[in-house]
Length: 449
Image (cartoon, rainbow, N blue to C red; front, side, top):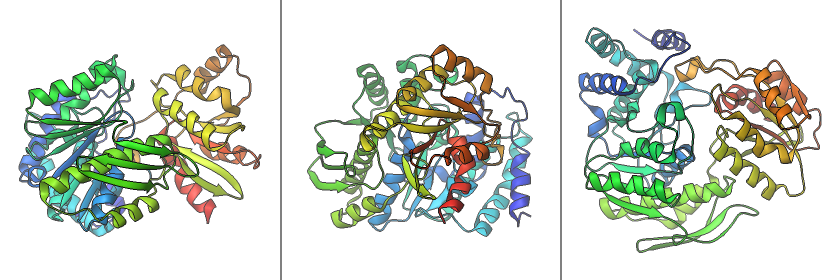
């Protein structure tokens, strides 16, 4: 019986793939997850699921959908991936972590099903697959009104994609080149994988973007006899970024004026538009009213940790953003220039092995006074597999090839944060990987107090 955090961690750690070259399980992982949930009574198909996939913005969009629905009085389950600090971020209720004892009790309840699955032809599940099953189990047990589920990697073969009810709402955010070794090396192939969350009869919401990407999504929606809505410039009116993101939003028969976000970044206007469109669609389908004042207040107060988040540490302004691919880093650089014109920045950067390092670093070098490179430790404790930071020697070679000499190397993120604070007059930026953000976030929280 699991009654402590140590026991829960020890149990889950047994299912972390030990091979450092662990391959994405693909179809087998989907079959395992589906079988595990079948043993639990298929809770995923007893829920009204809002399923979010994409390369950029899926975490923020998921969060914004959850707070909008919560503001309207609904009980909302939110699953985000990856997490920052606590495993329970994967199964939040009304944007709060469930009590540890509830987490332990839920995990204890599915142990028998995990053991049964392990004896089948599918073999034992992975850490991630267990947590997907636990998420759906907890949300069904808690009888949430809506379950907002962010995919892990991809969509078609992601473990969360076992929710197949016709009333599922599939939301697909911006598509870019990331995880190309698994998802494909072209935007069309990646879009095909992301669009794999669309099942027969679902309603689809996406954002206007590359025509080939949109074509792939519409093709999948058509094949699944699903209605597809595209949110674009016609829906986002009179937008401005300073002093805070503000815009008018029009969709179907609704016009919401002067929506203001605390969450910084031009991309958050796009993410919030998808979230608002989700609420409008659900209000029409499920027959509830949208109280604009409640929605507006919820968005004004919304903060999603680790995404263009501004903190003050000993008087210094620090921006924390897990920009881990060229698309996200380009947007980060653009927003930094908008919010802090005529400034350069000191960066702490760590990149996970296998990323497009050169293209990522090229985005920030023009605005960097200094780039401090530091590794992050393996985050198996929270994420379920061994994530390795790229060797600093590789990054040094890239700096030299790009003729950038204003860098320093530190052996840990702690050392890097100390160096970042040596020049408090310069805005600091911590970026490059959500694993780095996850590692330093508890320290930043303590320093803020």
